[in-house]
Image 1 (tube, rainbow, N blue to C red):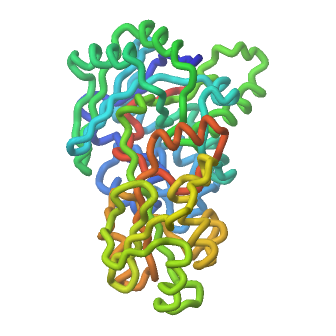
Image 2 (image 1 turned 60 degrees about the vertical axis):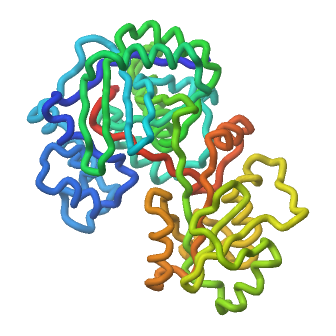
Image 3 (image 1 turned 135 degrees about the vertical axis):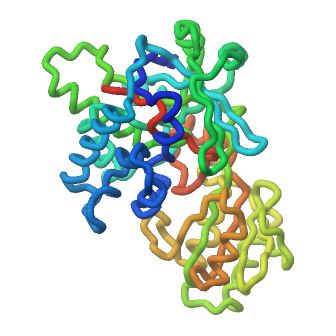
Length: 408
């Protein structure tokens, strides 16, 4: 059964939370973070992406970067100032993007449960990214951004969240990207802890590297603590957990830079061998098992050929897998999308117009617009112990770093 753990959040004052809060460290590059933080000394990017305050070209994994993160964190604590919650608490976090909204529980989850697969995964992690966030956590003695979890919704937890969100919020602000962020104290934390004991499993939606790094940081800090008891804060990691019924997944689209030595005409001759091709396609597929392809200034519709059977394997059955197995590898020669520099990925938030732009300006030869992977697909793959292909899901809206910090 799932365990959630109240914690004493380190957090900014109400009047400064909008200045502090920043997008997750891994959705922007150094230049984008530097631009977003320009003129704002309170931006949490100074902590999560501290290289923005160092010389251009600085090695992102150098000692200097982590030292700067610690310096900037201490400065933010002192000058913002950040303050600790008086008592261990649980919070609610609501995101509103246009007509969509989702409400989740902010608490800490158990590293033991992550290690035991009670908190399930669906992605492989990269050692270099694990190394980075592990060192960041250990240097700061803090988890500065949450792991995004989900669970199969229950009426009890839905009711508790609805009740707690009727009260005056702790924070309520709209970020520059138009996303509204609202945070409440959850009130009686024990009721939430008790309700989650009936939840058999939690699932990582986004934040696999943060979760893996929390496990590695715990192992290191435990080895350095001769009086380790299991109650230390490093045994838990910061999470926001949303019911599966509230999540919004957008597609993760593909752009391939060349046609693997084929002319557009030769490429178009090969595609009908693996897919039914519609000459005038929509820029976005309308259901699973369909794909939209942009080539030569024109959209084509792709669908499974009559008689094709969707694989029983939950990973192989994903639309991203079918496209890879039937077209990207055999025709375009994209064997490993983790390492092949000929393929790029575009989050669905940018829409098919971004795919058109990339192809029309010569930055890609062909683009594929996909139907979004469903939350049911994600849970099915996780339950089977499977690993989704890279760039299978794009969750939107994004949580913000720096609002509620867990010190370890």
